[in-house]
Image (tube, rainbow, N blue to C red; front, side, top):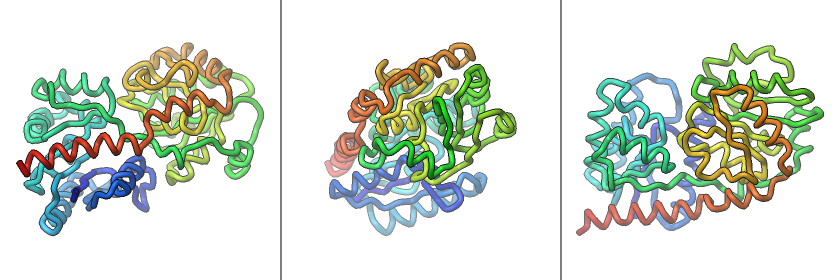
Length: 340
C-alpha cells in the first residue's frame, strides 16, 4: 500500500523525544513492504499556526503520492487535518489527550464526532481509552479497535547496568528509580518525589521536562536529566532498577512497556492502560493519589528480580512487528473499502 502517515508528533532537533515511539512502527510497516510518506510536526512549539503548516504539507504529499489510505495519529486536530488533506480512506489512532479534550475544550467534541464519522476505523491504544472514547462519543461504538504502538524488542532489551550508570554518571548504592515523561500534573511527578523522600539509600532520576521542574529541583538524591534523545532514554532505562509512572491517568504507558522490554521492573498507576499489561511479576500497581501507597510500591518494586525476565516476556506480546501486522490489516481493510 501507499500510506500517507500524518502525525502532530515526530522527533526533531529541538524535541528529540517528541513522538519517538512512532518511529519503530513506521519502520516496521516499511519492512512489511509498504510505502509510507510522512507529513509530520517535529516540534512541540509553534502555536496553532503549525497545524496549518501540517495541513499544507499533508495536502501536498497527498496530491503528489495519491495514497491508498491515510493513517493519522491523534483524533483532533490531526485526524481532521488528514481527512481534509486527502480523499483516501482514513484510519486514525487515539492516544489519550485527544480523548480527554472531548467535552472539556470548546469545539473538540464536534470536531471529534466528525473525524469518527469520516474514519473507516478508529484505533485506541488501550481498552481503557476505547471505553473513554465510546462514552464521550457514542457514535464511536463498534468502530474502535484496540492496538497499541508496540515496542521495538531489538532496541529495548536488557543491557549492562553498571556500564549504563557509568556512562550517565549515575552511580550510587541502593535502588535506582527512573521516571520518564513530562514533568506535569498528570504524570504525578511531585507525589512521586514525595513518596521517594520516605525511602532511604536510594536515588531517583527524571528524564523529561515540563512546568513542574522547579518543584523537583534541589531535592536530595533526585536527578533532573531533562529531555534526551530516544536512544539515551534506553540507556537511562538500562541504568535503572525500577521505572516509575504513577500518573493520575495513563491512557497506555509506553515508557513502562519499554522498561519491561529492557528487563526492568515497573511501578505504575492503576488508572488507565497499565493494568492491561503490567503483570504482578513485572511490577506494582498503585493508587496515584496516595503518597504512602506510592512509597510502599517503590519498596515492593525494588524487591522484584533485576534483571526481570518476566517483565521482558510480558512485553514481548507487544512486539512492534506484531502490532504493525495488526495495523496493516486495518489499513488494508480501509483501502479495500475504497477500491470496492
